[in-house]
Image 1 (tube, rainbow, N blue to C red):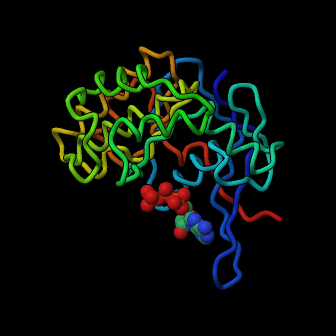
Image 2: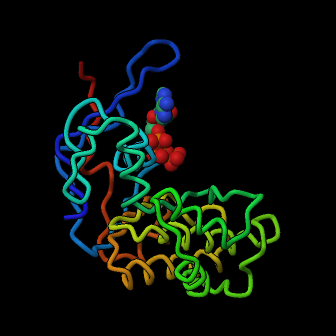
Image 3: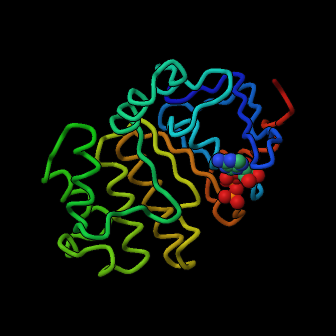
Length: 223
Ligand SMILES: Nc1ncnc2c1ncn2[C@@H]1O[C@H](COP(=O)(O)OP(=O)(O)OP(=O)(O)O)[C@@H](O)[C@H]1O
């Protein structure tokens, strides 16, 4: 199973010293190849949840099991390596490196995982319709094209799990549908499970499995 969350709790210490409980999820899982959209209000903990799943953030208690590995048992360096090797991430603001070409950005997604395969990088960019933009740097690409590079980069390490955090929030409606279709199609072509978070009901209705974060996340004050 690509993802299992068990009894995870997470709170932040706010600047005034108060504890803000953000996550309290008893159980959540994804089947291999499944595509799930998670809908939640602003401030509801969507990004925190994705960061916990990718190991960017630690949880206070519980288990985050990705591809059979409990990330809560790994030190930070181990979580970083695991993320580079097995998880693809598409961010709202793309997070491309502006000084590098589209092809180099995709190759960098492989380098962190210890691989480099120019042919596969080129194939991925062709797949997202950017075969003629390999040498363009992000500032020379349209916003929609930049997000398509980000989709290609997220697939570069051949991940088992793809996480997408509001991937269409920065693009217009025409690009929204292109990018969502590309993400969904490429994940299914590569057998990658997809967890996408959004506050948009338009985006959510394109998925078969729609989960409301508030239905299974019940933050509460805990020690
Ligand atoms: N590092 C932090 N320290 C303290 N509080 C934080 C921190 N990061 C997030 N928060 C708080 O935790 C709550 C959840 O934040 P999170 O970013 O996970 O929400 P979200 O559902 O992704 O929101 P949005 O849709 O607006 O991006 C918010 O109230 C936020 O202010």
